[in-house]
Every structure is written in structure tokens, then in C-alpha cells.
Figure 1 (cartoon, each protein chain N blue to C red):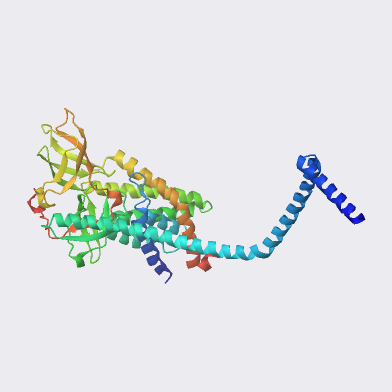
Figure 2 (spheres, rainbow over the protein chains, first blue to last red):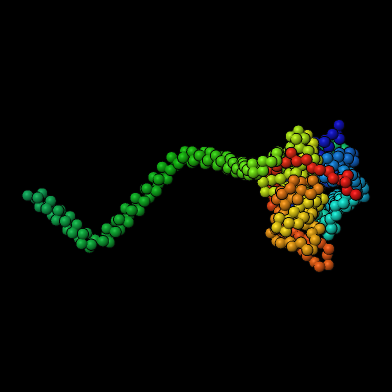
Length: 165
Length: 273
């Protein structure tokens, strides 16, 4: 039953993403709120449902976005894998793990999107993609990760109270 | 007789004093007296005013504070009302412009929809609207505003639809240059700009030339305004020249759009080699 909390949280996440965060642009880049939520959730030690969250988020994103569905599945699974891996490696430095994961997962996510568009015949110059989308999106993700992480940490403590003790 | 003399002397003394006072000979005395009187008057007046305020003003302050609180509440309510009405005016103006546009082009049937979101991916330029298949929307229907072409419906569910904007990097619109009378392909970019591709070198592209849909390919109706040529890049070494187009629609401010519901796009993909 604890895993069901993912449904309202991710629905709210995508409502906020499409209605607000996709309109807050830096050049053409925008923050990926779902990615921030997934990474923050996966970096909570007591959480056991990060993979389910990634799958559900990918399903929702694929429903909303014009990108091929596998893009989000790959991006979110890679982000969760990276977060769970780093959680075991640098568990004593959560902030370092947080920023490292969001840095690399943003780059990976955007790279997968870029490649998927390239495969479907949409050719975007790489320098344009970097300057207009990827780097601004990276900056915004790094900017928004701390408040999102704080909220998700509180949510994790509420959902898994015994494990938190 | 004695009293008469005493009274007369008294009057004479008083008259003398008055005469001296009127002549200014007693100025030092009168000014000193005046100062004492004024000081005393001031002291009494100040104390009286203080006592009066002590008795009456607290009640007035309470009343005033209540009035200020009430006015502040009313002011806040009115300000919220002003913002609400300004939004309604903006929406009404947008709707009026769309109605006017639909009346000027009665050959098409339109459905109005509000923009409720944007694509989560920053690589794509899609919007989400609040009308879907229940309202007669189908994939491929063109989307416009009173200003010009917006894009076309890319995916539909029962109560919402996703629209690919013409600024999307994957978008390609067959257009016609009004002045030059030539046709070309308009593509979107990741930065949201519009570029004209595949324009032969011999075509005279001019800044300000109006760009309209050509209808080729069956994806869009003909003669929808798209924008104007902003700048031209022409190099002798290239096979084609390129131009940047300024769209007539402000895509960052899209709130309400019109879907042309009686247009059936033609799928020519089976004919392509």
C-alpha cells in the first residue's frame, strides 16, 4: 500500500511540470521535475519502491510527451540506477550524491532524448542542443533539486516511519 | 467731598497710566505681563488638550483602526477583483478576436480550446489543449489563432489533445511566399525560431515578405498566415538559400487557440518512396 503514494505524487508532479515548469524556460531549457522527484526519492535510504516510481513516471511522461516512450523509460531507469548505486558508495555525503546524480542523470536524459529525435529524423545541431537546451536544463535542475529533495525526504519519512528510525 | 477727591485722583491715576500705556512708555511692563499671560495660557491649554485627548481620542483610535482594517480588507478585495476582471477582459478580448477571425473565414468550422500545458521535454514544442475527441478533434487538424497558424493536432484523447507547434524541431510546413510567389518548406528549430529551407538561389527573398501556407502535402489548408521573412542567408557556395521567419503568433503567450475541425489532412506517406 505504501507504493500507492507514488500515484498522487507523480500525477501532481506531471501537472506541475506541464502547467508550470515547462513554461519556466532558460533559453529553451526547462527543469525536469519528474527526474528531480525520482532522483530525490531514490536517494532516500529507507525507500524500496524507487524502481516502481521510475516505471510509473515513464508511463505518465510517455502519455504526455511527443517523445518516443522508451526515452523516458530509459532516462528514468538510468537515473534511479545511478542514484541507488551512488547511495551505496557515498552514503555519508548525501549532498554530493544528490548533485552528482542530478548532474549525470540530466545529461543522460537529454542525450537519450537527442538521440531518439535523431533516430526519428529530427536533426538538431549538437551545439544548439547543448547551448539552448541541455546546459540551461542542467542549471535549472541543479537549482530546483534542493527544495524537491527536502520535500521528498519528508515524504519518505512519512511513508516509511519505522525505517527512518 | 473727601470721597469725590479720592475718586477723582484714582481716575486721574488710571487715566495717567492708560495715557502712559497708550503712548508706549509702559511697553516693558505690558510685554512682560503679556509674556506671563501667554505662557500661562499656553500651559493651561496644552494640559487641557492633553486631558481632552486622553479622554476622547482612545475611542477614536479604536474606531479608526477598525475603519482602516475594514478599508484594507475592502482594498484587497477590490484589487483581487481588478486582477480577476483584467484577466476576464484579456480572455474576452482574445475570444472576441478569435470570433472575429472565425467570422471573416466562414468557410471553416472552428472549435476553441484553452492551452493547459506544455510538453515535458524541452526539446519539443508541443502544447496540451483542453478539447479532445469528444469535441470532434482528430489527429492532423490545423490549429490557428486570429493572428495565424499555430500548428496541428498530434495526439488526441477524449477530453484533451496535444498540438505540435510549427516551431517544433520536427515540424515542416509547406509554405508560399506571397511576394516572390515561390514555395518552400518552413521548419522549426530547438530555439523556437522558424527557418525557410530548400529555397532555390534564384528566388528573390526579401525581408518582410509574407509567408503563407501553400497547402501542398495536404497537411494544412492554403493561405493561412505564418509570418514574415526576418533575414536572409544567401551564400554562393550553397545549393539553396536560407531565411529566418518571424512568426505572427506569439507562442509564449498562447492561451486560447482555434482548431479547424472541418479540415481533413491528407496522408501522403504511402505515396512517398
